[in-house]
Length: 121
Image (cartoon, rainbow, N blue to C red):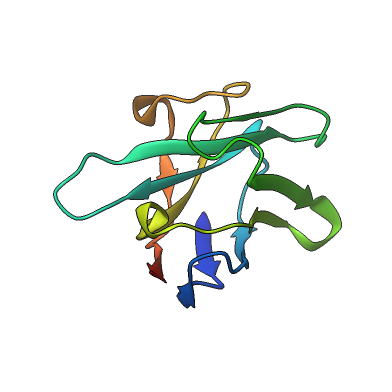
């Protein structure tokens, strides 16, 4: 049984930081990714990391502010979010795929339930 469980979301002020965690069980995946969805908008790619943690890719909107990492010994992937802005407010989803550094939603077959991140002005 594959399970992806996100945690670490919350309400913060602009400029603050949060670290999201995603606990993975049941399978080993080639790539773990983070997506987010704001009200009234499509779910969009945020960042992804390969199994070995040697390669990452991130969206231009978060580049330089967000960092994805993973600790395979703990079966956990992280998203360190710094310099948060109100535009970052969304539900953040953890996802998994066997593909390498995929960015398209359609390539991810496993999803968590999401964790809410709200950034106030």
